Length: 66
Ligand code: FES
Image (cartoon, rainbow, N blue to C red):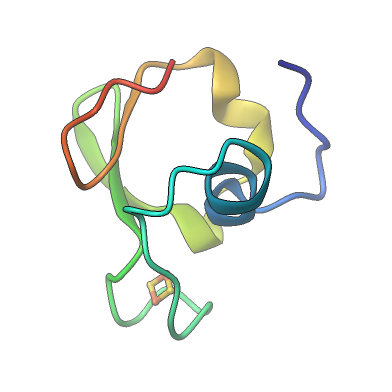
C-alpha cells in the first residue's frame, strides 16, 4: 500500500483500509479515541502521518495492520 504523506494515519486506517475500530473524535490529539500502537508504543493516529504504514501497527482491536 502506498501512503499519501499529508494523510492522517487515522484517516488512512478508517477510509482507505476500512479498519473502523480506531475512532476519531477531537482530531487534535487530546481525547485518545484514535489511540494505536506503533512499534509497541502508544500514539494518536490523528496526529500521525500516514507515512508510517511501513511500521508495525496495531489498532484498538489488537489487530496487526502492517
Ligand atoms: S481523535 Fe482525539 S486524540 Fe485523535
